[in-house]
Structure formats: structure tokens, C-alpha cells
Image (cartoon, rainbow, N blue to C red; front, side):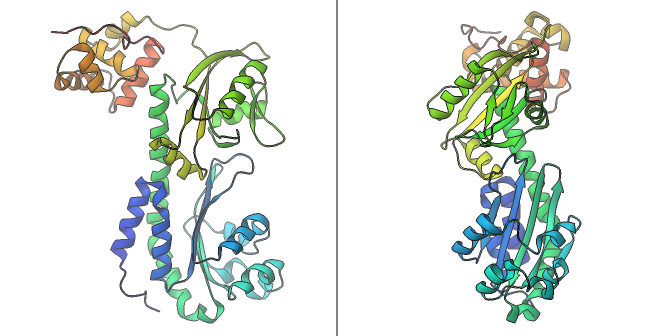
Length: 391
């Protein structure tokens, strides 16, 4: 079987590359793959750092919506292909029969109630794209039995050709999403390298939990999971704040407060709501497969000792102007805002940032901000100071 004419590999590669930088763009990829293989049914399923029973990613083409709803409700744990599918190594393309022999499949409830009623879509194949303790992504296609011999070889060939690019794109999704979330946290004076961070739905259900937050949830001393699958503080005062934020999602400004764990440990909590209008909310919503608004919860342990702000220049060998600009950058100001407050030209501020990055051995502005926060602590920059001119 030759791939359906009118579409070429370059267009599919272009769409995959577009989805790599925009997780909302996977639907055109899945749809084009279906068309190239002969108008088959295709899907991209997955989850990333999901906690509890939150829904997985479903990007599909060609399936009856009622059958997909039934699959999500009843057959996710009864899919006869799944055990064999998941035994495959990441990147390995398997046919449907290799996942589960046809004779075995036909004796299952899954076949009788889901596969056969959809024009007997018993043929096809797929691949596990990524699998580790925090995520799983699979791509696959289902082909009608009468079309299997004609279409299945081309579908598996298409998968073999494009699985590496799909894997690379999903890795980039995670990297970019993590970087943007990290930048957001830094703008709110939270170091993502040391904070325990959770992303919650408006109902309080965790959809993303980093390893530090997972440890806290498992210990149950500061945070816990309720029987209904929502995240809750053990401290009543902190829990009342979180509950209020959930009730007023989108109408509460970011805020922080201190709390004490039962073991006496001091914690600092930062809470913020990402509304549907914010780009980061849409990006995270696509990455974690839930609609905005989303709640960002970050917990940090206050540092006992921090060098005074005046020592930043000495620590990094910065000039007074470079120190001031670096501190303002750490406060969340943009170069344009810094130039405005300092009464100097934007090009001067950019050069001072570059010099500070070079002296601090930082390749990115976010690394410089992290370095400044480590040396000075949050809330110490001069962003609220009166504008002054630097010669």
C-alpha cells in the first residue's frame, strides 16, 4: 500500500514541529496521519505527572464520539490490546495482532461491545512513545478488518518513520512547559529548583505534581490527598485560604503566607490562579489535559541565613549599576520597565544584564534571576524604589 497521495512527509513533519512548541496543536498531526494512511482512525493518548484519577490526553481522529465516551468511562481498564501494547519498548511499532492475537481479542467483552460495533476495527497498530514513572504517551491507529491487509502495512511504515520525531516533540512539550512555569514562579519570587509545586484544577484536583510535592503528599504532614482526590492542607488556616481561592478562582490576586507543619517545620506557601485568558494557563491546560483556570501552589522552606542585598555586587563582581539591574530583574521587572524606572536607555539596561549574566556565569536571564534570589532572598530588589538616573 502506498500512502494516500496529496500529502507528503514534509507537511507532517512541519505539523509535528509546530505541536512541539504549541501543545494545543496535536489535533492536526493526528488527523493528517489518519489521512495519509487511508482515512483510518487514529489517536494520541497520554498523561504527564498525573495524580489521582484525572483524565488522560485524548487526541483522536475518526472515532464515534459516543464510543470514545464509552471507552473513557468503561473500557480504559478492559482494553484487551493494552497489556501487550505496554509491554513494547518505547519507540517499538507493534501491530494490533502482536498486542493481542485476533482469536483472543474476539472472545473479549471489549471486542464485542467496542471494536466490532465500529465496523470491526480489529487491524492497525501503534507505539509507546514515552514511558517513565511520571508519564506515558502512546500513538495508534485502528483499521477495519476488511481494509487491514491493504492499509495496515502503510500505517506501520508511517509510524516507524515518524515515531522518533513524535518522541522528540513530546519531550520538547515538557521542556517548554516546564521552562515557562519556572519563569512564572521566578517572577513570583519562587525558585522552581527548590520549591514543591502542584498544579490544581479549580476543584483542587492535582494534575501536575513535582517530586518534592509528591513527597509531601505521601508524608501527609503538610499536604494530603482527600478521599475525593483533591489536595488539602493539614493546617486549617492554610486550607481555608486554599478553599477560598478555589471558590473565587480567577478573582484573587497571587498571595503568600507562612504555615507550620505538625513537626514544627516552617513553610512558605505561594498561591496563584491562572485564568483562561493567560497564555501560560492555556499552555499548561494543554500539557496537563485540563481546562483553565488552574491553581499554582508552591511550597518552600524559608532559608535561615541570606546574604544582605548589599553583598550581591561583591559576590558576583558586579558594578553598582549591574547589581541594581539584576535585582530589579529578580523582582520580576522587564528590561523596558527597568529602563523606565532607572531613567536610562533600554540598550544600556540590556548591556548591563548581559554583563551580569557573563560575570555570574549564566547563559539565560532565568539563571541570573535564580542566582540573585539565592544570594539575596526574595523581595529584596529595588523594584519599588523611586526612579533614579544612573550615569
